[in-house]
Structure formats: C-alpha cells, structure tokens
Image 1 (tube, rainbow, N blue to C red):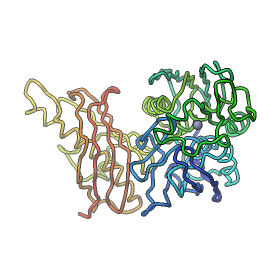
Image 2 (cartoon, rainbow, N blue to C red):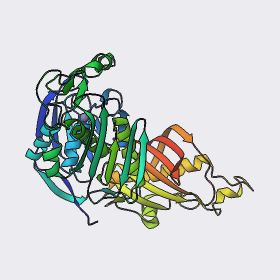
Image 3 (tube, rainbow, N blue to C red):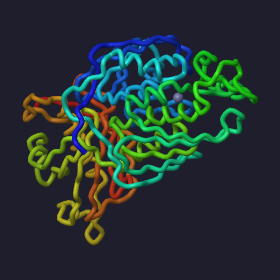
Image 4 (spheres, helix red, strand yellow):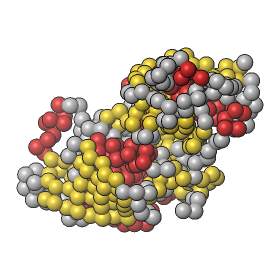
Length: 429
Ligand SMILES: [Zn+2]
C-alpha cells in the first residue's frame, strides 16, 4: 500500500442546531488542525475550553449514541460528525462545540458532509495512518456480530432486523469513498420508535428528538407522515454509525466489515479489535539508539527495547522482550522466575515517557526528565515470565502545562498482563 498524505481543511465551516439527546442548542465549527493532531473536540462553552480527542480510550457511553470524555466535558453523539470527517478522509481537525452535543440537524450526516465540503478538504503534510486488516477475524458483542476481512478500501455490508412493516430484514453493502458516501449514505437519517420514547426519556435521552430530526415509526409506519429517502434508509444509517464509530481508531480503516445487528457498543468493540489486530501503516518507529537518546535510563533499568508505533502526541506502542538474563530474575524468584509487577509498570512508564517527550520535539531533551506523580487503577492480570514479549500501548488522555495523564495497557500474546492510569510531569534536570 503506497503512503497517503494526511488531510485537513482549508477554511473553517459551521453548523448550528439542537442536540438529539441533550436538547441543547449548539454550534459545531470545523477548524483546520496541524498534521498529526488527529480529530479533537473542544468545548468552547466551558472554562479552560477542555479538549477531548476522538479516540477509543475516551469512549464513556454507548447507549443509543457514542459519548466521549469525562464528567462536565463529556461530548454526546459524536458518531455523525465523525462519519462525515471519515468519509472525507480527514485526519486532522478541531471541532469546536458551544455545548455538550453536536446538533442532530435532519438526523443524517448530510449537513456535516456538506459543511466539510465547503471547508475544502485538502492534503497536508505527513502520512495518514492506515489500518490495513491482514487476516479475517470476528467480533461479537451482545446481539451484534462482525466479520472483518482484508480489502483495499473500506466496505460495509450491514444486516439489520426489526419486526416492523417498514424494516423487517434489510441488508446493504456500501463502499466508503467520498463520492459513494455522498450518493448512498450521507442522507440516511437516524430512526426511533414511538413505543420507546417514554423509556428513553426516563433515562434522560432524546430530549431534542422530533420528526424533523429522525424517522419516527409507530406500529404501522411513519408516525408523522413524510417519506423515506430510500426503502432501506434504516440499514444505510446503521452503516453511517459504524463508519463514525470506527473513526475513533484515529486511523483510516481498510477492510470489508460484515455487520449483523450492529449497535454502538458492538461498533466500539469492533473498533478496538480492528485497532489491536492491525498494524498501523504510516506510523514512525524508533530503535534502541533513538530510545537511549530520549530516555536517561540505562542498564539494568532501561526496560524498553523498541518503539514500534508513535502517532503524533496521542498514542505510542513499545516492546519489552523479557529474557532469563534480566538481573531481577536472580532473586525474583530462584527456581520460579516472574517479572516483578512494579517493574512491568516501570517499563510501561518508560514507554509513556517517550510519548511525553514527543511534546518537546525540536527542543533538546537531554536536560529534561519525566517524573511520575500518581498511578491509579493498577491491575496485574497475569504473570510475565522469561520468553514473554510485552507490548505496551499508551494513549495520552490529557496534557496541561507540563503535566499529563496517560492510560497504559501491557499485553503478552494479545492477553492483558497489566494496566494503569498514570500521571506524569516533565521537569528540568
Ligand atoms: Zn446514528
């Protein structure tokens, strides 16, 4: 696969309206972002204008929508905006929001897709990150199931089933390119049933719903008249939601995905599986020489062998090969060597230190050192023994001033061995 340039936009564009679940009036403004930033939401209505990257590690809720971020800075229903961004193959973008939820508009992605068209999608510098699936696999989550197979482009084959005269069983297959998306998917609206209104309202959802922003169905047909845009508009919209949720991988996905009864929870599980099973093409790497230029640690305390992926300032993947020659195995324990849990976390922290140093690109880092300030939610899932290769994946959750929060997970052969949330700060030596 030849490298593709990253894409952003030429000029800002805005859309205004009401949020589907929160009912809040909001304006969403697309702004060009530097290459490597990824897609970031910014809550301009809150003090400090907190930012939430559109990444899987930020997913907070998946009931009837996909919400990202924490507490007051949560952003609800990001999937339609992200589907439009992904359909234009835009990699770097800031989405400013004046409220907790992008507007639902007519319930389709069309207004977002057109606003981005107006904003002039354009190639920028750097290489787009591409998840090119290499071997088939399946994902099951609740009632939703997915088959993922290699393909040159993204193709979504979706089947839904609802015991309703206008839906029944629908299957559609769609190739996702900007032109095909505009023609076949952008206009497909979200839908709901009058029979679920009370239950969803009781949960504080759909406060902004109306027949102007969704297809509303009663037992027999369209509750408020009007017409469908396609007889299979329902399955088309589900394909749009999958595209939006897959965008949370922070990469362009190249695969044929066959989805049966997709849901947001299922789509997020699918996105995690695609992100983990697939090498990220177009991502820079670092060998031990570069690592030793960046980190002050030396034998026997340098616990990173290789950095295999660095995505801007957002995510890093590092490798530690554990051998019987590690000095700690002499005493931990004779005849029963297991890697001390605190050293697994230390190794994870060193990989995180490499991610953090990325913020000082172009500046000398020899006189900087990373101090870890807190560890939360540390869990050890299984022992690490000689012969294991630990793969540490860390995502930046927040960076303010010189302090950051990262989420790290260590895997051996795809199984989680340890995880932790870490807070660190960069200080001058
Ligand atoms: Zn949707």
